[in-house]
Amino acid sequence: MASSVPTKPPTAADVATLAGVSKATATRALGGYGRINEETKRRVLAAANQLGYHPNAAAQTMNTGRSGSLGIVARGITNPVWPVAFQGMVDAARLQGLAVLFAGSGFEVSEERKAIRLLLGKQVDGLIVSAADRRDVEHLQRITAVGTPLVLWERRVPGLDAPVIEADMRQASSELTRRLLDLGHRRIGFVSSLAMPQAAYSIGAELPASIIQDKVEGLFTPFSEAGIAPPVDLVRFPERDRDAIAAAYHSLLDGPNPPTALIASDSQIAETMLDVVRSRGLRIPGEVSLAMYDDLSWARLVDPPLTVIAQPDYDMGKCAAELAMNPAGASTLPSFSARLILRGSVGRAQD
Image (cartoon, rainbow, N blue to C red; front, side, top):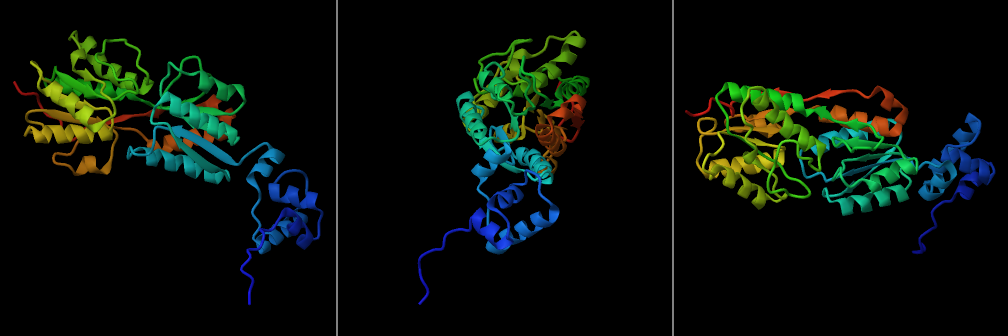
């Protein structure tokens, strides 16, 4: 009768015995460090494969100073655009033989701190962080202080010496506004969400997220260029909650001088924007024009198709990972463009 007692997993000593080498030699071959000839390495790896040996990650990190992993801290992956960028990061890491460790922050600084402590504790070889609030950065400065390569995703942090991967949102945003102005729109509403919601917006106000600031200021620049007062009263920053976002859109449309065009700062907010507009029976673009940031497949399938501002998420994600794994490449930081894609949801403003 076979014993039901589980066997112990094979050790480096077991691999050494089967390969006919010392334990120290086997450990170097299995860890990929130190000098060892190719024939010995081949024999050790063959023995490890035969025994089903898996190296101890903690011990390997102690021996090499590298964990073979890349850390990513972002709000989460509920936004449908994020997995595209994430795939770019994963593909780049895989080419370098690195695993990817992901931690969600919900764009809350306290959760971001916890996530960074966790990943630094695992001695990741590089970090990509989408900063929750560029005004609270001590924990981000700690990353570079301990020598871990840091790349910022879409969000600049003043005073932090780290490369930023972002697309030029100002130019594309201004292009959208110029198109709307040409079509007679003067009341353009913008809804986004921030970790710390704000009741009102004024030109030049510092926002927690540079990407949101770039979008808003890009949208309003053509107003100033044309000598038209920008509609700052039509900017809303509710909590990232579907009911709060819906309430923001209803408040805009119920105002005494409602917008003739609505813009959502991302695809998730745009879903709520569409729900609100349809629930009110408004014709698109006859009574209100719509646009959003992010280009997802459903934006082309709704009726009418939705005008969007798109960016190359996959390429940006790939570049971020490459920089986190090879900080020297930051000296040749590439630029990424966002582009306006006009579709049927934008039309002439009603007289």
